[in-house]
Length: 158
Image (cartoon, rainbow, N blue to C red; front, side, top):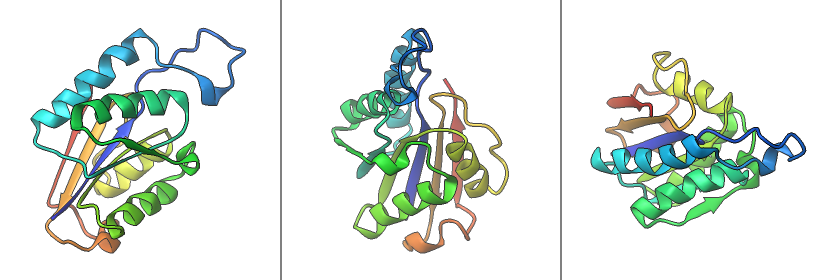
């Protein structure tokens, strides 16, 4: 069995228009939601073997909340910043093929919503900030996750 958790970064702060997009921090709501959502995911029984994250500050901070909950340090990947659904899927599959049985990825829209939509067979059409979409397959073949319907899936929003 293999599993994936898609986590859209928590709510970011738009207060300083001079900051580059990559450097925007979380706002107060995001700082509350990230650890709360990490705890909810832990309560669900999901345990990531690896956490992948965009290098953007808001994604890194969100990923760190999950890292603190699960004791798994995030693997920061520049190519996940603004990544498309196929690029996100490629990163997930690479982690799986490298030996992970469960992968958690923190990244951005529209890629996260597009990937959740595809993996849920068009049932998840929106990933709000700090939403978590989880998927599991009875198969152990990471190469089929985009072509085989998951055995289970869920969406948790803050």
